[in-house]
Amino acid sequence: MASIERTAYPRFKRVTSARELDQSFTPTPDEIAWAQGLTRSSAHLLALVVALKSFQRLGHFPAQSEVPDTVVDHVRRTLEVEKEATSTTAARTVRQHRSLIRERLGVVSDPGYARKLAESAIYAAAQAKDNPADLINVALEELVRARCEIPGYSTLDGMAARIRAEVNGALFARILLRMSGDEVRGLEGLLQVDPTTRRSPYDALKQPAVGPRNAQLSTSPSTFCSPIVRIEVWRRLLEARHTRRTKRCSSRPGKFACNVAVAIQLGQPTVTHHHWMP
Image (cartoon, rainbow, N blue to C red; front, side):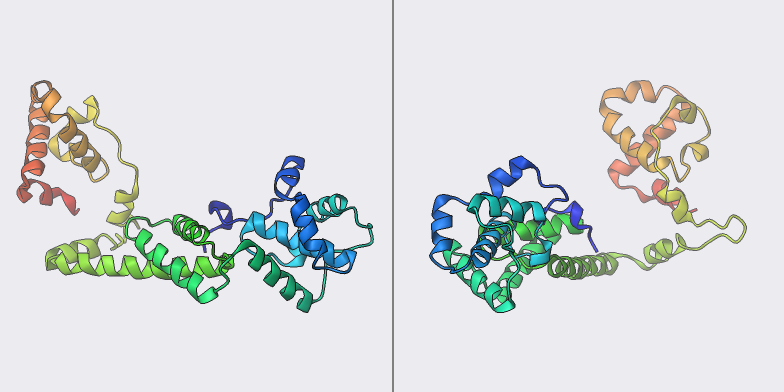
């Protein structure tokens, strides 16, 4: 499950500042007149306006218990209703208020359509993105663009996890089909734990690679191509090959490093495969 804090999913803040109350939760005279024309009591007026401003801020309807007291008190003061009035109403009234708000704001209230739209956006984004939070954010952007009521967070989170697994599984299957038997066995060998060291070759590959240093270049070729160092060293050697070729090839270890870099660039397997698998 992706943490909601890592996404752009709209929600109430733990502390609502006075500035946000003024900018996001202050009803306009037109909104007040609209709500007054649809309600008969102070409590229903307060509940309708609180729901309206909450939806405008979040893009979905929160439960009445989720609305911070500071928001309710701010709206109550703006409407100048008595302190005894509460924003908590019966379920039937809540449904009526939400219907009125959707009609006023022109919001698309179709859960099935919203889910299909979000699924399509997540599937397209999953081809290039892997972070679940990023996938959820892409869906949110598409839902807001289409003026759809945003589904619950758990719905988007479960959707992103499922589609991400499907896309990655298909990608893994395609890679597996292109691998030879030796390559498959080599990858499986990375997970075999040595009974003496209690470490697997994969443990070494997970360690951060270090850059090439003079001390490493002055050692023997076998030390230079240790599992931890060689991948990053080869990459940097390829990048610097054209600008520093003469200097790096001036010593015997330097010649070996350049030969390795050239072999990789030319796609010669005889040099690289010897050291890849311990």
